[in-house]
Image 1: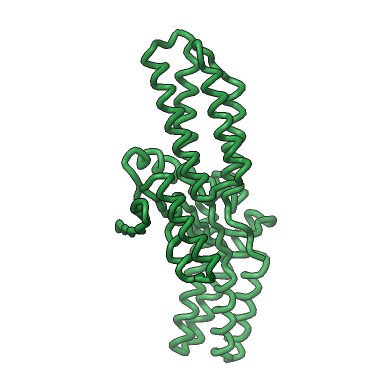
Image 2: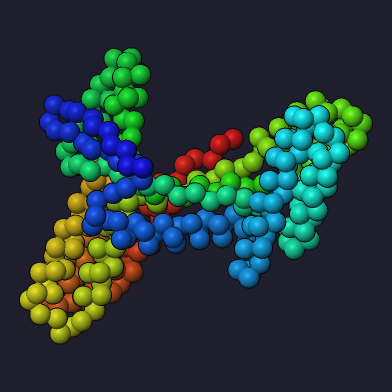
Length: 302
């Protein structure tokens, strides 16, 4: 469902949307969402592609059987709980047999996008208001001011920790066998709380800027391009700059990384004059986009 929030500032208003974005970004976002989901699953599941779907299915079934066991314990049905735990253990053993070194087994992947439809000046004005509020000790006001100031696709992968989860299931089964149903239920709830959630952030301003640069690269590769192509390259570079400045205002990557990206766009502009290809500069900016995206990831929780 589309959700819009309006954050008013003295200069202008920002429209914050969740789960949607401008039409000119939708196609790109859809493509990147699919790639992001695949990449995130691949990172969490370092197994051959041919086995990944079956592994995911077995891990999901193990989780479902854990929940079935909890439902049975709620009804004080020890027999049904034991059967569900046996099925869960069997599925987990299959997963581990296929890949003994696997640390995390994915059980769910979700994707959601958030976008800020507004100018760089509007974002900066809102940031300034939040900074002033923080300086005055008005933490909650600052929190509400910046709430929703994100332009990104988030791929969330939930994983079973295979180093601990199977043993927790077996321990719960022992408690059920001892008719310690409440303790078994507590053990299962504790096991479920150990599910590891990893978020992979794809900043939309960086995604859009990168897409514009890649299109400019293709046009610049044609040494016989005409005036129309030259004008198109300039428009694409302008789009890239605008998106990078928006990403900078939203605080993605580091200041130095965003500064380097903007500088490299200028270098591309110079390098593509007189029908130049600027191949090495385009290659350089690809690496800088990659580094900036890595810097935009959430810090690991200790």
